[in-house]
Image (tube, rainbow over all chains, first blue to last red; front, side):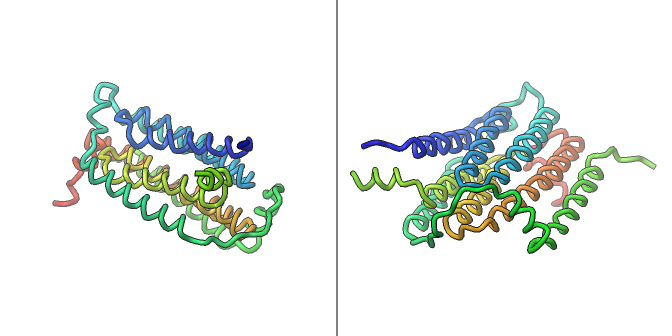
Length: 168
Length: 110
């Protein structure tokens, strides 16, 4: 049986996503965890491309890989002495955590496999950026503005939290 | 056997949902078991990514509209502000306690 190339590529990308997420979850070294988050974020961006979401994929690469990951790596390097890598990342209750995750995943897969999902008619792959821009300034104008306020508040809050306390 | 191979080869909504479910379960595992505050933030990022993947998969396979992609952009925006605030809090905790073990920072209890 001939396996189409797009199926192979999907499974390759899904393997990268799940594999690097497993390294994030099970590595005892937080630097390794933070770096393998790169594979997860990049792989999810590739899945977005497969789903025809070109704008979201670009945003994912720019913000997650370019912003959040760098921020996390900065925090790891700043809070963390190289000598006690192993100790700071020890786990408590590994077996109960694993059991909770496995039970949750089992329920999810059972529900996903057993449901007859609604199907759209064949969707053409076309650029989505213009449509998303029109929706942001049309139907979703209020959430868009609230998002701007949230970002401003987050900015001010981060500055307030991280500045040095001034003693009287 | 043949029908399982056919099911695996016909990549559809369910395959994406399973991938995002695995990401979610791993995120739950991290949040439950880790004591390092930054590790917990990594788990939260995995959970947010799985939610975004779900939205885009449903918008592609179920509705055919781009509304789901807009929700994903909002999720990414909230993840960015969450990371900024969360890491600022972690750094403030580190300056105060010289550790980011979440079980060592319990002075609010008293």
